[in-house]
Image (cartoon, rainbow, N blue to C red; front, side):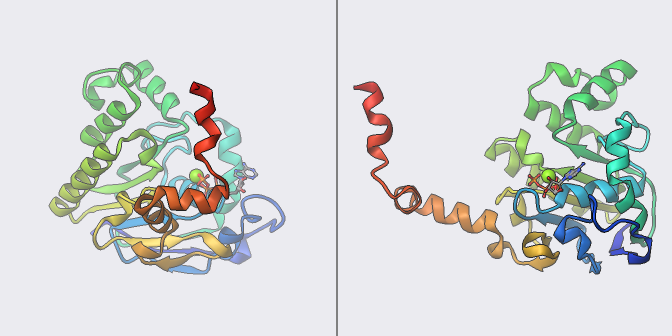
Length: 253
Ligand SMILES: Nc1ncnc2c1ncn2[C@@H]1O[C@H](COP(=O)(O)OP(=O)(O)OP(=O)(O)O)[C@@H](O)[C@H]1O
Ligand SMILES: [Mg+2]
């Protein structure tokens, strides 16, 4: 069974602790992370290091740092080099390594779409140029067409492209895929309280300078969304500490 089993940092391979990526607290504190689920989520505050580790794992596995699969290497050398020291110091244990899968970054989605167009391989992504579809449509086209029966599938904030409805659809799709193949594993950095609800997922928090496992209801994504949605008025009252009704109402008067 193809699976990432653990993520560790070989500290003897770290050349410079004073520069990125080792200046990121959660990254420099990596000890050994046991991966026990085929649905692994990275959560944490903006800037806590999720994309950094995701990118390093993707690079280690052989994916281009800007996304795509092993055959798409269109990254700038700058992106490559900044993450390189971490990639080299990472120790990843796999039960089997097929090399299949992809790495999807919202930030480089545009580049990936151009790359696919230039290669003339839009057929492999559903037949329509990714540029000629909406952000969410093209993202979904990739999910529907590029997930094979095995491999490592890594995504960085997929919810950026997706409506709540499509996030639910994505959840159902991932579940379908995972149920039909033991050989598939997902690693997803996300802030989405919908995606994080995936049953049996392992959630790693990057907050407070360390990577540790937390439960769904312990995530900020869940707690803040839940608190906010259960009473937006009360939440805003505490947050803004003023009568927020007066802020914009004058505009229309
Ligand atoms: N190339 C770089 N050089 C120096 N610092 C960087 C570089 N890339 C990212 N950083 C810094 O490293 C930290 C972690 O960034 P990272 O992108 O991994 O955060 P993140 O958890 O993915 O955040 P977000 O939720 O906003 O996507 C941030 O403080 C960021 O400013
Ligand atoms: Mg990020």
